[in-house]
Image (cartoon, rainbow, N blue to C red):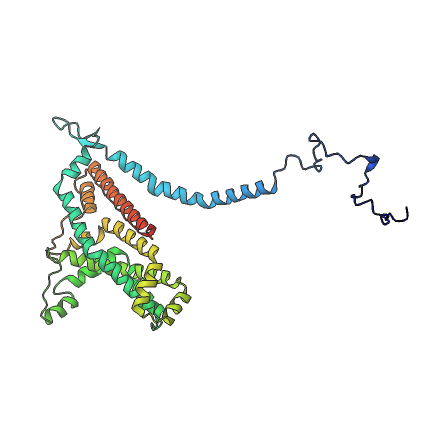
Length: 347
């Protein structure tokens, strides 16, 4: 009929055109049993990802091997030997003709160390030392680092070197220098103090602790200043500029922005200072050689262990005392770390 419209050329009544396929059937998906053919020579070769991972592990093992070897030789082996040595003691035979014999004593050396009043009093000395030393060290280092970090500071490199230079001097030499400066009739410092009407005996029972704190401050203050100053240099300067634009003063910027941002460095210095305080040995040992010094051979726990080993030849007692000192240091380190982590977790 002429009134019925016909589809245009190529139009199949609105139905989608058929896609021609070979032999009139749609192509079949490849069978699961069919596997891609590998290129010749590729069998047995590891993939690039595996070879790269193996090279990374080999490089990491090569770089870490010296550390683990040194850590084992300098840390694991001495600690293990000290633990083993602390379980034995030397005893004489009944008549004393056979000489000393090394026998297993269990925890006897630990009980002897804890039962000795001199060993316990050494920790009280350390407590007083930390009460003076840690606030002065931490506060002084922070103040000096903040002063060096201000925009008004001049000759920063000179003052960094001047403050760090005492740390480069060995503790033994530093103690000898201050022994000279503490000795009357020899020290210009004592002479100047006496000329000003100030009389102070650095070797007396009252002056021994401040004298040792002064030596330790002179040695370690600049070291901690450098740590704090390096941390302050990493603070984003845009924050400081924004605070300045908002009208914050130097004190507000220091205590509200700078110090919170270097919290990790503050915790690290506090932890190292506590551990170093428990190892107090060189300064009081040299000071005990001074005339009329109140420092005894068992003034600190480390000096007690040294005296037990090299003056009384009781190596088991010395090892037990050393292990107890290490345990106290570990407990304090854990407590400081746990406390600071809890403070950081608070909103």
